[in-house]
Length: 111
Image (cartoon, rainbow, N blue to C red; front, side, top):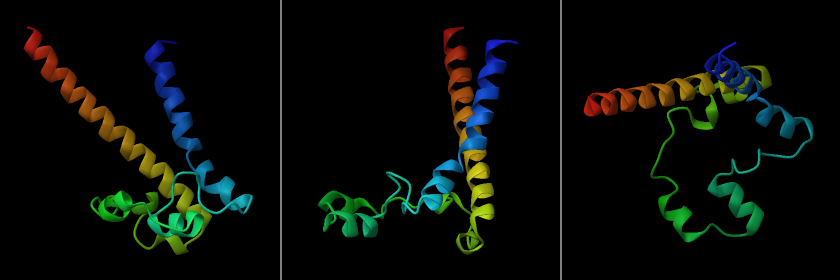
């Protein structure tokens, strides 16, 4: 098997494992996944919101907030797990497309 094929297979496995970040905290009643906190959760955890986060936290709105489709937050863990996988696939596709486009542009410059 070629190295690139092995890398794509590994990436596919990681995509399929992405819902673990949602399932494990739910299973162990640990709250949100580590590092996935919003400013309201940080306020509860440390007692204040850092000034920069408070000022710039709302600057960017994610295309798929919480890695899920609109209204799927109430549908349960199965729907959210599927949304995580779809989000991972879209993210990998976007990064691959951008990297491919940059590679094509750089290859044309080098000719």
